[in-house]
Image 1 (cartoon, rainbow, N blue to C red):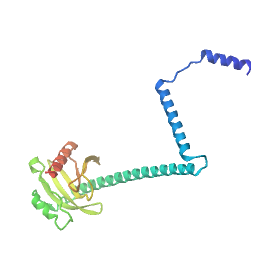
Image 2: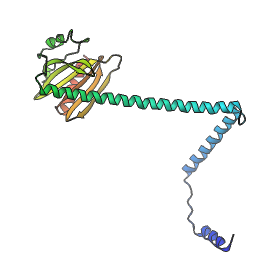
Image 3: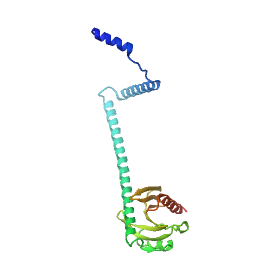
Length: 226
């Protein structure tokens, strides 16, 4: 070491700023070092000498566990995305059907405010009986019903009136699926809600504001549980 190195070393010792690590950080580092030391000791004791069958078995076991965890995590992601895609498709489908019903002359196939006239109309046209609610006392009268198609299957569509707004309610069986609380979306300027209850899927769409639609959904789902 030459004189310049000696001078630099002396300068660092006298002028450099020293920072002590926080006690919490030091404690975490010490604890982590202890954990690693314990794990290595257990691995060595259980697996035998390097190159032994026990150590090889342990490596393969760890690799297998990591692979299985990765597969499980990937499956969860795929199923989540698939569920989201399906929900998105149905949301678009109900909005498209709602718009078509308003543009043409096919809003209802059976025009009646009497649920006892609307519900029997679906008999023989569907392989299930959709629940039909009478909300006239709440200021939301039934206008009628029609046969519609969603997801390449026929479904019941009920039509309600809320002031100047039309509300379409699409209903079909939710075989083997548990009840789910209402979820609300906005798509193309329409408010959309869907939930599962009493063994049925319900999808509701309207240009009524979200507060009005939430009240309608509440009344419809409360009536389902009576």
